[in-house]
Amino acid sequence: MPSRTFLSLYSHSILLLILSLTLSSSQSSSSYDCENEGCSWETVPPVCGVNGVTYANECLAYCQNIEIAFIGPCSESGSIASTPYDDGINATISIMQRFQKENFMLTERRNLADLVLPEYNPTFHSEMRKDEIPLEQQPMLWSRFTSDGYVYTAVVTDESNKRFLQELPTNYESHNNRSLIIIGADTRKIVTNNHNRLPYSPIVELDYGFGNSEGGCTGTLIGKSSVLTAAHCLYNFGRKEYTNPLRMAPGRYRQGTSTIEPHGLFGFRYSTIFSVYQTTGDGRYDLGVATYNADSQGRFPGQLAGTLCLTEAATQKLTAETILAGYPMDFPDGNLVESRGCKWRLENGIISHDCDTTGGQSGSPIVSSMSEMLGLHIGYDPNAPTIINTALGWNNATYSSVYAWAPDARSCPDRRFCSNCPVLERSLMRALCSLVCRVFGNAE
Ligand SMILES: *[C@@H]1O[C@H](CO)[C@@H](O)[C@H](O)[C@H]1NC(C)=O
Ligand SMILES: *[C@@H]1O[C@H](CO)[C@@H](O)[C@H](O)[C@H]1NC(C)=O
Ligand SMILES: *[C@@H]1O[C@H](CO)[C@@H](O)[C@H](O)[C@H]1NC(C)=O
Image (cartoon, rainbow, N blue to C red; front, side):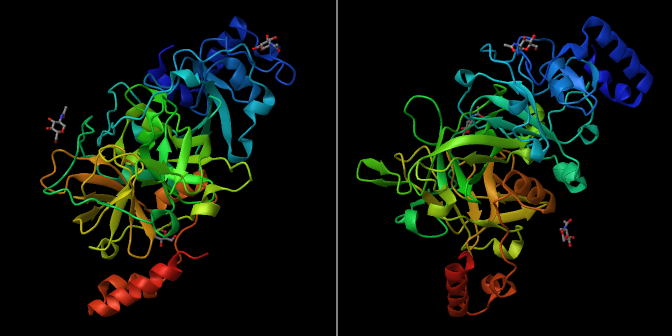
């Protein structure tokens, strides 16, 4: 079936009717016993639901009460795997309904063994194929991937989310390149005592499920179990596979030749990203949330290491005191490094900066002098003249997605007093103000 005709099918119910007649004559949908048998992953082919979501097979759509628009994936460069992972175990109704409260439906299954490491790969322009439905006409979907290999999809109905970053400029370009981006001298400094003080303790290192390698990406605890990071740390666009951010270590540091996990290691539960990142790799959607389990004593990482609150990036908050901190690949394992005194430029919610960075620092938070998280480092733009590194800041639309993925996250209190700190004229007052706000700012 030609998937490019999706939109016209969508709007032409007569065609839909013909298609569903074709469908029911090829296989009777009502033959599925959802409650007792569930759906086999052996069933092919994938189908496109009338909601614009691709399901691995018609049984999954049927059992989740979705009418089928046509056979085949909704989009040619769709996010669906060519063959779902099948270990002979059917998808049961309870697996399908695992995230029903949040409107996620089960859509496919992947083999954890196939998962790949993250790669530096955001492309800061939309790589839309000409034969595809324009981005703004596609339904906005969220994709959730669980540690046991199930993929769930939610159709976003909230208006501000549907608009999301489509309003942002598309003139950012980037390359597959995880080389060092050191501008002038390398001014990154190792942070000491990062494990027991803000804003550092909620900054985490994501470890991947391959070999013994430590690290791979940086993230930030924004809720007791939620880590905000780059989408390319959770999904490898080049390989079209999810990554397995197996474990996460908040406040990790290096002591002598070993690394210390002062708050322990936490196991991965699921990750949530924009489906459009899977199909386009568009850097404007390069953010996601990984959710982690409690430790064996039932303690959540954010309860032990603390969390950072989110606040809208504003020029007056991007000062010489603003830091970018993360776990780079070119330092020995376990070193948290920070950059200070960077140049910042804020434009349409995108933050350009010249902090020194390298692979592993993807997902690093940009933190104001008041311990507010203003943005997330994702990559760089090789064509920019000087300020070539790129980060995503927050705006209303970003917030609403991030908060939906991380209901335990919170926004920073609106403290007019504190937001004036950086613009105070006398440096002593500025320092005092920042100190007070840093000490009391993030205390809950
Ligand atoms: C698995 O689901 C298929 C339908 O997709 C059904 O025919 C089969 O009997 C189910 N197997 C079990 C063990 O329930
Ligand atoms: C990667 O970046 C380095 C440093 O900017 C540059 O020398 C190199 O040519 C780049 N490689 C690719 C494939 O773009
Ligand atoms: C964000 O939301 C606030 C409050 O709802 C509103 O006043 C503001 O205009 C919004 N900003 C944008 C950029 O939409």
